[in-house]
Amino acid sequence: MINGEKILDHPIRWAMVGGGRGSQIGYIHRSSALRDNSFQLLAGAFDINPERGRDFGIQLGVAPERCYPDYKTLFAEEAKRPDGIEAVSIATPNGTHYEICKAALTAGLHAVCEKPLCFTHAQAKELVRLADSRNLVVGVTYGYSGHELIEQGRQMISHGDLGEIRIIRMQFPYGAYASTVEEKDPAAKWRMEPKTAGPSFVLGDVGTHVLFLAETMVSDFKIKNLLCLTKSFVKTRQLEDNAFVLMNLESGAQATCWSSAINCGALHGQKIRIIGSKASIEWFDERPNQMSYEVEGEPVRILERGGAYLYPEARREDRISGGHSEGLFDAWANLYRRFAIAMQAAGKGKKVDFWYPDIHAGAQGVKWVEKCVESAVNGSSWVDYN
Image 1 (cartoon, rainbow, N blue to C red):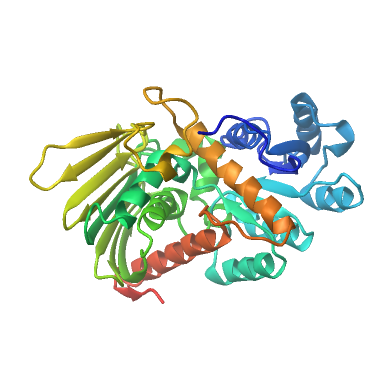
Image 2 (cartoon, rainbow, N blue to C red):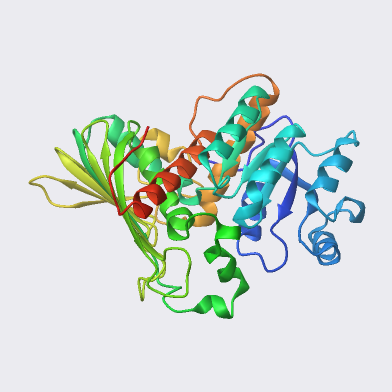
């Protein structure tokens, strides 16, 4: 169980780029990073408007002289300090991730980056090369992957509880953008502009989240080929607001993914069902503390977060005893805890023996989106993945 005891020699000296006042995800980054005393927020370039960003940083308790106007100044000035930052979180619109992450790695900093890392697989490979050659950690915030029941599913599959994996059904279809909300909401608008969002809307925005859940739980999730069907049901949009993907895996299993922003009435809708030759499991992020375990010929079982019957690897990330709910903030905190341990280990020339959404996972998400778009623009044809 995680109980707040010190896990590092010292908290990682940390900054943020973006995540300022009005950000949808800035607070959860800070809350999660600071929760286990693993990071210390010392600096930042919090807003594209320097004065607004400086004021916000000061309100967070950051020293005024360490509230910088932009990320370039942040990295340059912090490099001059004996107590300069060691890591940075990138919580900015998609179109800026590549240049900021590359600049951070070039400056010798570990990074936590919102997905997508970048827009093209070629860019992703460049970031992987930089991170690996400099022994730097890049964590990607596939948030719910840090929930303990995702680890439980991983352990059940690796122990053979489901038998041979045959089908993986993924979905992340929410309904918030079923109409032209972007006309009045700037936070929605940038997600639908190719220049700022990249080559995809819902595939990159939500599809990669549930894809990483599958990759985490099914260790041999390797795509052989895929077919993608996309559509913009709101006609004024340049990017898709609904997408279906079919995948054949190298193992012989098959997978599907439904990504959507127009599923009217759905608040979130992220769900994964994994079907084996003996049993199935299903997890739904709107009810994250339960996992359905369905053995052929037996009554359905509901596995509860914190249950003594869970695998030890899953119970290790309890933050409170069973019966109490844990959710997205707890899952993010688990990821940030892993990021911190990995960063400290890397600083000592070591590697960790646990998984986390790293730069390779981020690069895989970029490649998946690129292949899905390739299939869609070519008449929804089958595309080889390698």
